[in-house]
Amino acid sequence: MDKNILGKRIKKLREKNNLNQLEFSKILNISNTTLSQYEAGNRTPNDEIKEKVADYFNVSVDYLLGRTENSNSEAGYSRISNSLYVSNLPKEAIKQIEDYIEFVKQKYSSD
Image (cartoon, rainbow, N blue to C red; front, side, top):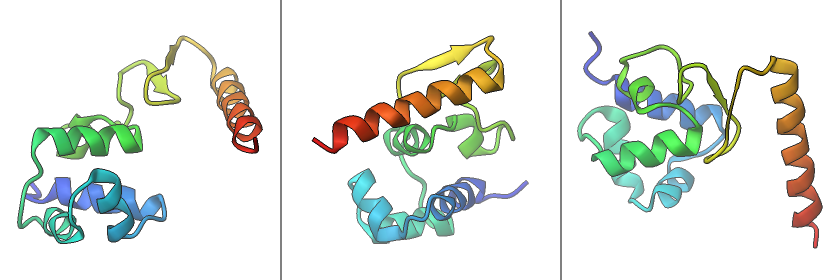
């Protein structure tokens, strides 16, 4: 078993979202040195940081820890925001909801 799966998953998610260490460390309110140590496996984040990472990337803490390969936060649900879950909807309906949320964000960010 990989001893640094947590660090590798944080790095993978950060890079997938086009964030450098400095940008993401600011989001987490930690130093970029600390984030670097997490990613290298030299230091382990506390539970609060793990939750912040999971919430930011919309994944479960279990995914970060390597306990599951399913990155969804809730089994049977698709997370479309930090506080909104939908279940039993076809993927097309979820996509429409996501598109509408993006539309609303754009509409109100231009004011």
